[in-house]
Length: 67
Image (cartoon, rainbow, N blue to C red; front, side, top):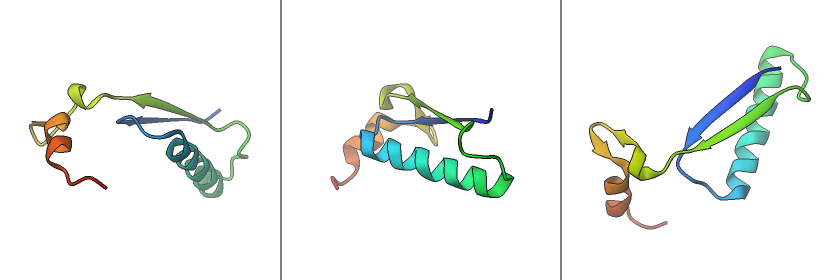
């Protein structure tokens, strides 16, 4: 049973559903493993608990233009 772990900042349910669908389809296509046993797990990581390039993500998100 392949398990894909996605560590990501909190996302809307619809986005997680799309990520799960696409990862499952592509993993199945590339490996030839049927989709049924493929599991996708999401680990939500709060921006206060992650940093990139030495900068806390919460600070980056505060500066980012809203979408």
